[in-house]
Length: 203
Image 1 (cartoon, rainbow, N blue to C red):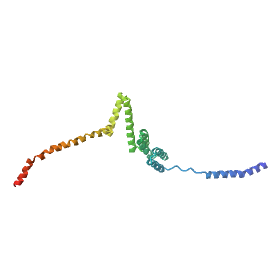
Image 2: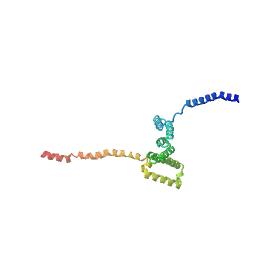
Image 3: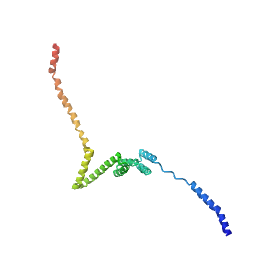
Image 4: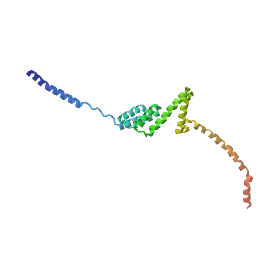
């Protein structure tokens, strides 16, 4: 028994050393840096947009959205950037994220409406090229879409070629010189205009 107790007594300093070493290791371990703030991430994303890194800026805006899931600003910018790049489906998804956080956001509504229209227009063109609009159902749906667009955006949205009709205005300007020639004959009648002068001379 005495030998066992002496052995334990000899190991106690070692246990203490191990405990102290572990505590020192815990205190000396490097602490993880806190994640960037929402404002800092948004500023970095905007800087990337300015420098031309659109793809990287989209990822950074997504990081900002994860930094504060309650904010709509990252999704507004994602919707705008995706729309400008022609990625209308992704722009719609981002716009819906905005509307979940702010149902009254006008930018998101605009992106959602115009992006949806352009997707529908592309789909109609594909159907027309394939001859699928020959069916009555597809034609009725296309007519319904066209009437809705006219009611909300006006006829100009479906008639982009109207500005080309302004060219005939040049013809009206060319017709002006003959009118000037017609006006010239009154100047060629000095007899009619001479009478007043003769009367004045007589006085």
